[in-house]
Length: 337
Image 1 (tube, helix red, strand yellow):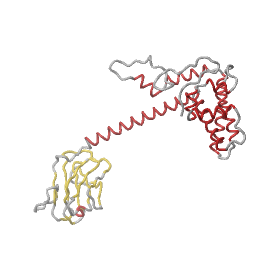
Image 2 (cartoon, one colour):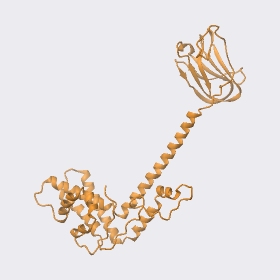
Image 3 (tube, one colour):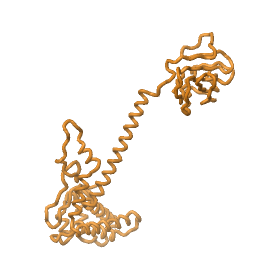
Image 4 (cartoon, helix red, strand yellow):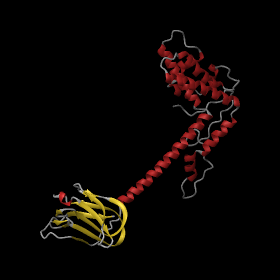
């Protein structure tokens, strides 16, 4: 909302500006070194942890005299009360709200400085550009300054008084943002935002790599190149895009020999697409180690174009798809995983 320029102490002492860095309060990074040919690990560490920034702000807070810390706490209390009134009701009279913000601004500008006894004098030496930006320009600041230094003139329009209250609110918040406490809170929030962002980015990268791996490699088709047979063969010519076509018979089947017992946990079955999808329904998926005892692991009772059942990993050498009625069975593709 406002500039990060720190206020000079009202007693005329030179202000201790935050060390320069990538942000207004970022500590100097002159001591950081990047290993030759390596990544800037120290800069990355500081970007995430904000360790140096937090250490500098905490040190600044410990150097602040008790009077300054008390003035900051008093100003924050005034602003919190006034903000709460503004957000909880629309009928509050503007005069007491302006008085609360005036007290907060006075506490922050005067603090423990003996050189400036009045709010008007403190406003004259405070950073003008920062305050003007906080309230939307020089004209607004001039009007606010007049309202803070002297009471609102009697009979002033209600809209003018309310506008003055909101300008005072903006200036009070802008001044609070210059305090070490607020800079500490902002640095802590920034640290957690960056850590959360880095964690989400890392998880997204891992998920993307895993998805790309599945896309490029995919699960291994255990049936690829393995021999297969069917319960019968249609003597007539059938479409070339079919893997097989049995004759009309009771419970026709298609069987794949995987070569040796392996763990099987899923199938991918593509039905004939040009016609006759119903011939493959109902369809049972069965597994066996010795072709003598079969275990049914899935069954499709609805019309389908692609059927991809998954089941608990089962050791099997033979995989059989069997139509459970009098029909001709024909499928376009079968994969085993």
